[in-house]
Amino acid sequence: MYRLGIFLFGIVLVLASCEARSISIDAPDDLIPRDSFTRVLTDLVVLEAHVQGKYVQLNNYTQIMIASGDSLLSKHGVDYDRFQSSLLYYGKFPDQMEEILTQISDTLTIREVQLPK
Image (cartoon, rainbow, N blue to C red; front, side, top):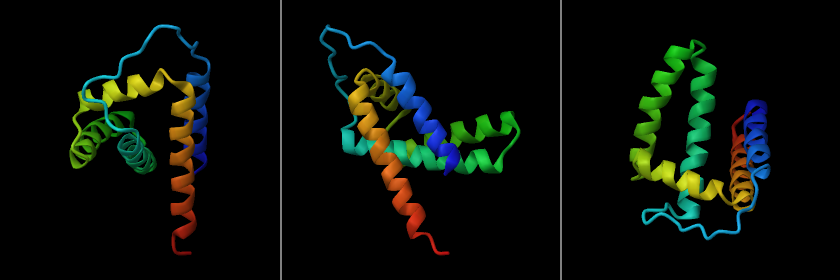
């Protein structure tokens, strides 16, 4: 869970450092709705934590993440391009992205508390 906290904190810092732009930002036609995007991203964070803990060799880690990530996206009915365009869109709004990341962190904290001891 510590690594997840560092990961989420890093993302928030990067997004918070982005300047707000005064131009209009149009959502992609196939934008993943925010609640669905949050669920997909939550599952990806869990997947990455699992793979990171199990596979220390970078080559294995990368191959497993690509294959498993594609499978996870497919489970959610999303392809990589749609996920990527949605991630780029939400990333242009640091306040929204911070809320999404906070929701992911809260969800994972609840899951961790509910684990049998």
